[in-house]
Amino acid sequence: MEGKITTTINNKIATIAFYHPAGNSFPSSQLNKLTKELNALANNNTVSLIILKSEGTGAFCAGASFDELLAVSNLDEGSLFFSGFANVINAMRKCPKLIIGRAHGKAVGGGVGLLAACDYVYALNTADIKLSELAIGIGPFVIEPAVTRKIGRNAMAEMTLEPSAWKKANWALEKGLYSKVFDAVEDLDKALNEHSLALSSYNPEGLLEMKKVIWEGTSDWDALLIERAAISGKLVLSDFTKKALLQFKKQ
Image: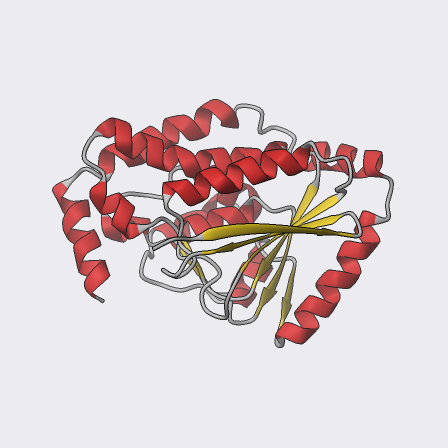
């Protein structure tokens, strides 16, 4: 099953839309494409702002591709796969353009990490979140710094230690993962468009300096997230994880 990533640019606003038929999940090829697209937009002087969204009316993002996780056969492959998420988060963190997320549906695991790496997030009230990693024998190690930075360590631990429990969109709003939550997609998109146009009209140098301030204290993430990827890469090889992944795929 093939996914795709498309980018459109209008009024100095770049909109990245990702899609995968398996719940907008991410195989490594899709993660690599997203990283390259973010890096390209970082150097595009015609762009002042980035919107990150997914396509369809189902999940915003189901996280890592279960098919690819099941195919991992050694530590190098496992570390390389999870490094894909590390690279995306670091690209979002270091991108000089502010990134606004649009969550129209549920987000799991790595999908929560993507939203946490956005600078501002608009969400529907159906955009519930879950960190299910412990239930399949791994943990949200790569995305943890981004999630903790947004919602705090206690809330991150609560999500992680309840891997089968969905947290409502309003919970995510209260904890700071979401900036605004709407009952109707029309209202969400209207507010998102108005806010994006306003932001894109501001001084680009001011936006850049604000982005630096927002991400202060994260300069060690280049190394940290790759180290975390190795932890997940090791755990995904366990018999527990292989059996759990097969069970999840049957559900």
